[in-house]
Image 1 (cartoon, helix red, strand yellow):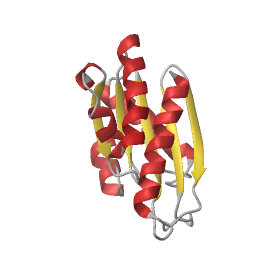
Image 2 (cartoon, rainbow, N blue to C red; image 1 turned 180 degrees about the horizontal axis):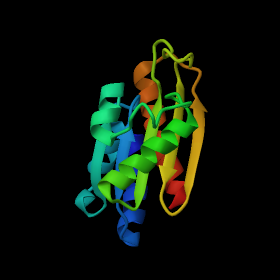
Image 3 (tube, helix red, strand yellow; image 1 turned 30 degrees about the vertical axis):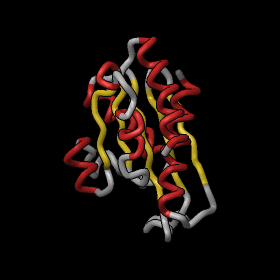
Image 4 (tube, rainbow, N blue to C red; image 1 turned 120 degrees about the vertical axis):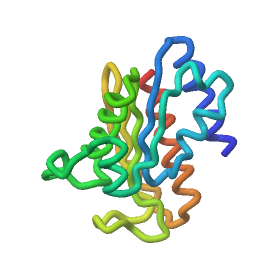
Length: 158
């Protein structure tokens, strides 16, 4: 968790300096992104909301993502990560939306992705998505790796 806290501290400092806000929608990282960002002193200056969007029901109830929104799209893809980041940003009224979706392990997901697969996205004045493959079935290590990669992505974009 220490490396996550260090990465989140960099993001927090930049967001506070810029006067910007963020909302997080995460899945396979299980709340680690939000926890790392909220562990920073002064988090209320930049952190607006976070959601663990782990199921279709959560996707609908927390972010209002309908079956029509998901037409020709499947979870655990860069396109889906971008949709999550856009929607959490819109719903929370923040400058940035940060999203993660994937398969932590120890097995893959029902969409055919192997354990250690994650798609990440950050949406703000500009947007970017990427795919991470750890090649590991270690659930806890993958969760930390997914959160760390999302924080790195955001930090690079700030």
